[in-house]
Length: 133
Image 1 (cartoon, rainbow, N blue to C red):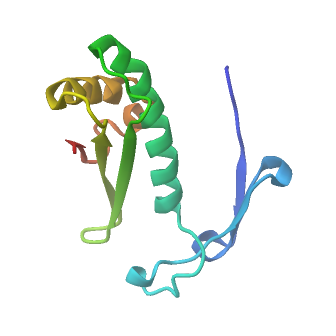
Image 2 (image 1 turned 90 degrees about the horizontal axis):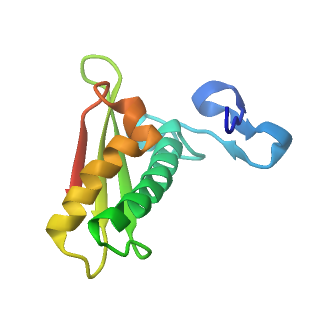
C-alpha cells in the first residue's frame, strides 16, 4: 500500500466533510439545480477536482512517450449528475496542451485514460468522453 487518506462527513450533502487531521474541512450543500441554496460544495465538484488533478498528472507522465512537453497541460473535468432514471454520473475530460500536435495529444490522452486511477475506477461504470481542445 502506497498511500491512504480518510475523510469523514456528517450531515450528508448539507453537512460538513473533513479530511483526517482537520487539514481541510468543507461545508457541503445541495446545488441550486437540485433545489438547494447553492451554498457549500458538493461531491461532484470534489470528484471533478480530484479527477482533473490525477488525470493531468497521468497525461504529463504519458506525454513524454509521445514526444510532447505537457508541463503547460490543462485538464478540465466536467462531472454531470443525472437524475433521470435514478441518480447517475457522466464525465468529460477536456485536455489542452498548448503548442502540441492535436493528434499526438489525442493519443497521449487516450493512453493516460488507461493509467489514471480515477479513469480506471470509472471504466465501464459511467460514460466518459475525452475531448482534446
